[in-house]
Length: 119
Image 1 (cartoon, helix red, strand yellow):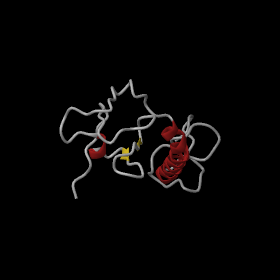
Image 2 (cartoon, one colour; image 1 turned 30 degrees about the horizontal axis):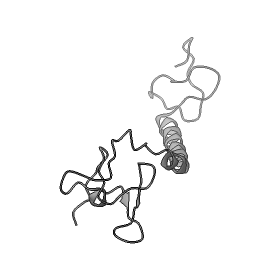
Image 3 (cartoon, rainbow, N blue to C red; image 1 turned 30 degrees about the vertical axis):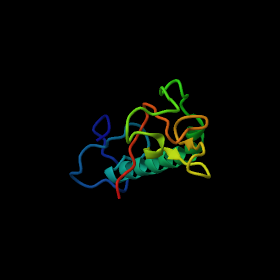
């Protein structure tokens, strides 16, 4: 109910449904309306993140920040074993990384190493 013991006059109001959850002159906020609004906001936010993903990809980490080196010292943890590595045109050519800026050696290594999934 609204302040002053007035019943909600909105068409969605049902007897015994409880107090109106929205203060003011507008209609009461039903659970369905609130969930619908939340779903719409969530879809909008997801769309915003998706369109912002190109910008997020452009902001890569520096080699110094991830302690990148062109020669990895740990067997099986070279850049060509990492899921973030994008190989060059030939196996020995420098490639790129999805999260580290600049050219990346296939046998390099950094702290951002993420092993490839095994098939």
